[in-house]
Amino acid sequence: MLRSRAGTSGEGVRLGDIVLRNRLVTSSSLLGYGVSDSKFGYGMSPVALLVPLAEFGAVTTRTLTVEPREGHFTTRTDWALHEVPDLLRRYGTVLRGVDGGWINAFGWCNVGIDAYLRDYYPRTREQRTIISLGGFSAEELVTLVDRVNAAVPAGDIAGVEFNVSCHNVNFDFSAILQDVLDEAVPRSNHPVILKLSADHDYVRNARQAAAAGVAGLTAINTVKALRLDPRTGTPFLANRYGGLSGRAIKPIALRVVSELREAGVTLPIIGTGGVRTADDCREYFWAGADAVALGSATWLASYPGYVLAPLRALRIRRMLHAVRGYTPPRTVAP
Image 1 (tube, one colour):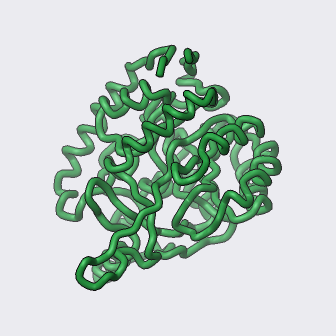
Image 2: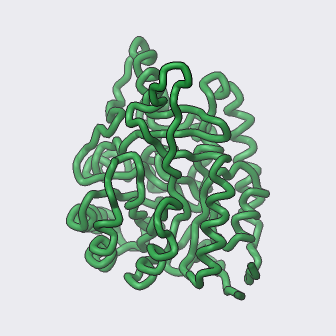
Image 3: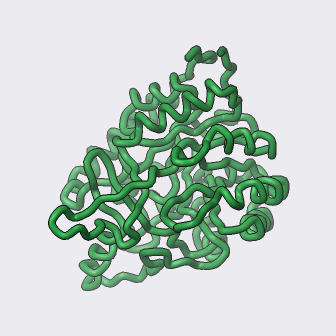
């Protein structure tokens, strides 16, 4: 199968209706709401504080819901210095390093769409933004879309991403997906990106998305996973199951992108999972992705590992430079 690729315009990289500054974006959650909201950098990877976020194709927000949601963590941002040990203990119940990656179960903890649009979005106007939205019904997604429409003029952001594939909220999204696509997509004044899961029928979901007028796809969300303490049998995470991300899922994500193209899916795809270098980006482009997102493999480290944050930030800057000047092949033969 030969396939034409998204092109480049004078205003940036155009993936159908989605306009990015370049082909390198950031994944949801790792950079919070796109701006640090405390002196400790709470809600953002420490590495992100050393990188010019406005230079990315787009910065994807933490998934936002209609109402504020604690999830399995917290929405607090007012941590005092003496409370930092408690904050770190909380992190230990929802985020753990594992072989080849990370598992997390934050459970969509967020400040809610209204607080984001009031307190955070105005502070990130210099960035290109993808606003991640999550809900448990078509009605909730419609409400989220309507509130973004009311606050953000068309064209001011790259798009909204529908996160209806998260494992950490213990909900069967397959039961609402078609209703979400039918009801929420037509209402959006902004391009809609559907985030796919490798644990579901992603080819079918992609075809549903295309039929509903979705502008693009993110492939993939985290992979459902479990780790146990071998001495006690206690789950690493408070939610028992979590989402696996990082280097371990890169081959899975590449497979999903490739299989979507082999199945005839022509929507633009943002590939994500295990990206750390420009070579990783090229692999995704060869598999069929039109853009690539940096997630936990780039932004997360063990706490001592953050001492090397300046070096990691330098590597990210170099990757930005390499991808900015890179044009993916216009045809891909599997």
